Image 1 (cartoon, helix red, strand yellow):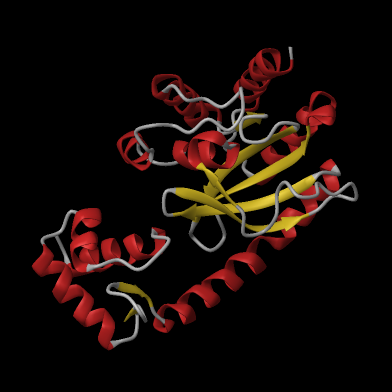
Image 2 (cartoon, rainbow, N blue to C red):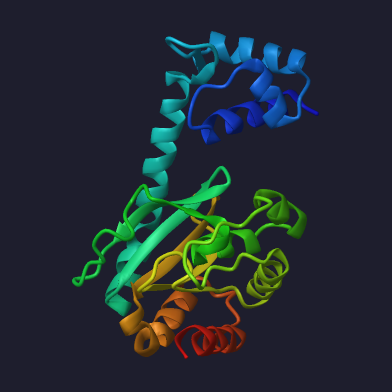
Length: 254
């Protein structure tokens, strides 16, 4: 394993953690020997990429990573803003941009429709990979083994429509790989439906773009949303995606 790979594993573990991690905890989470973690932490600490947590043992991300995160975030937003605006205008619904955040997916930008979805989706909110169309779209953009490794052993249920069976989820992700579009019919929030597609964006990063709307408008507007996503991601198999959408609507909307 290269030095860069070890550094990436350690930084990812700290980014995914809700609190500081000790060397032993980092070794467990990364699968690296404790001695390798110690050497990596020492190097990162010298550059302030990690710092010792005040008041308790362990390490957390330091100020050295902020310059990369802020610059990358601004570049990502500016590169995609025009597409989000066009999609929101074409569908008159919320258009959202999302990226991986550890083992979850997070909304990093949103253009809201005039009929704003209050309190459901907002910038900075994270979603489970298995229970959102943005998560399923991003999983489908990865090799099957990598996608499988990102999922927890137990898939949390958020609504009655959440897919909690791993085999069923894998089958759906495989289908999304072929058609290029993921569908969410109240799988994370009751009353909310969405469509998403994943692609390598203008910054070179893997990202997902979604159209999000209330269930009450999904039946009438989902086809237009699908066509709007096709404009952004030409590799979408429109015929296959329509069939996938209609099957999900039949099962989810009755």
